[in-house]
Image (cartoon, rainbow, N blue to C red; front, side):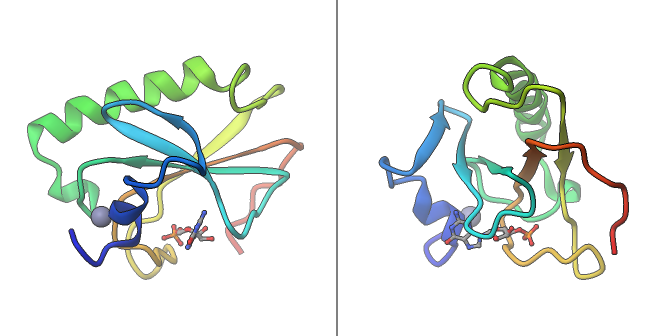
Length: 112
Ligand code: 5GP
Ligand code: ZN
């Protein structure tokens, strides 16, 4: 999508923490934890409900890869939290599905 921020970032190569053919990871510009990354599938869709079968398959692979690189590349020792905001009540601001990866400290559990 031409005017989508996260589609535009696909072409940027200097700010990525990780990249493969399915997705890339960047640091969130407004971190909500000491470590806050965004894992962004390269295919554009906003909602989980819009996924085609390939997207569903790819999302499984993306989760597996995140778990694989969590400690060594992302420095997420001691655990981490994954969040996918969907729609207005969740506060989704970028209309391209992304997985927040949060960690670096012991977190509370309050979607305030
Ligand atoms: P959402 O609110 O849609 O779940 O998450 C969007 C996230 O993207 C927010 O946490 C916000 O800080 C982050 N974000 C928005 N614009 C930029 C940007 O230009 N660069 C980076 N690295 N993160 C961004
Ligand atoms: Zn997009």
